[in-house]
Length: 200
Image 1 (cartoon, rainbow, N blue to C red):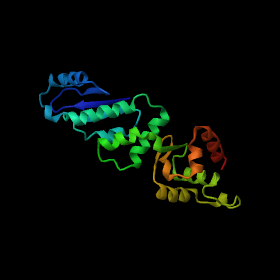
Image 2: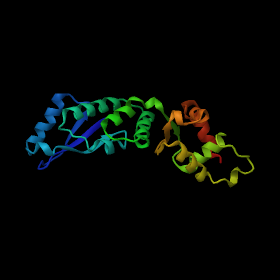
Image 3: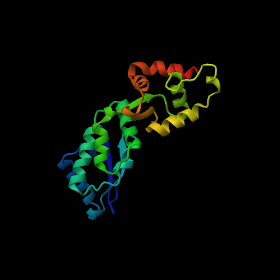
Image 4: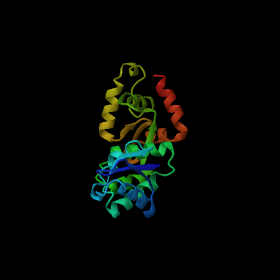
């Protein structure tokens, strides 16, 4: 789900445009803005409502007066429609971990969510370090594990593999992760991996 909060200089109220939108939907919003302001050139996005929490950061500079950009925004609306919570987290993580330089890059992330991996419940460097050690990706003898600096282990892995932390877990590119971490990212293994981590 994606709604754009549209404003215009001199307008009394903002309007909301739900995406994907038809030309008629766009025209209706513009007509409501026209009732209090004729400064069409100042029409802009001032906010978003979406289950993908960070997507507004990547849309706010789009020119809603440009038909080509409006068409791309509609495509992004199509990509956000009906996503599961995990897919929203993948979209969010993909946006924050890639170099996004415009709407085409946002579309690219949305069209390729399968290229990203979500490791649930790993939301900090320390939790990443625990996950890596517990699952043998960074092997250490059990006798030294209580003395390890898990945050440092997580920081080092993050620096070498990229990705980003979301509220639901660590998102990174699948092709950057070891097979063991990809296995942990599978839904059937998430609960087991999380339970093991919390025992540390």
